[in-house]
Length: 180
Image 1 (tube, rainbow, N blue to C red):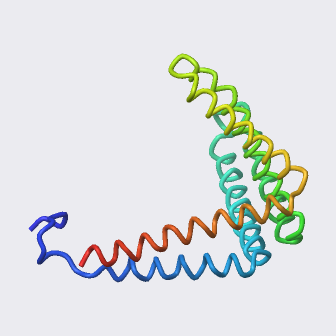
Image 2: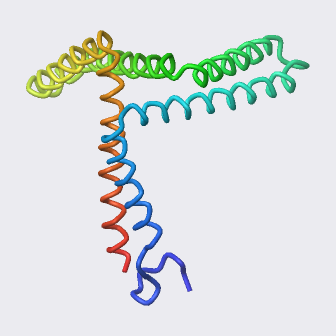
């Protein structure tokens, strides 16, 4: 029997999707209720990932040094990743501020790229071009305010992640019921 079959007797209630959905919704509300703890969690996750990445780069150096002339770059990158990870673990404030600025800069760069690429829409429609240009300019203005106010950038990041968790949590619960 095919496991991907859509027959009624092969399907049941999807408890995994239900539990995942509930956990996502709970996490969303916890993020909204305690944004500072959410930011600390992001910093902790980023710190651990940075340290792990540093170890990966250093281990890559030991494999590459015999046949790759610039293998020292992996060693330097690994050491920097580990230092950044440790710095974030030692100071949640520096980590949170860094993540907030990275988020704001990402918005800024994405907006500039959107403005540059909106010009190609002129060939298709002046209306689409104008709409896209205005939306990207508004996004650029928002990015500018996020850069000037890193607290707003950090809160925006938390709110976006919370909204994402809420939407996908609700979707998972609906999927659980649809699978029965």
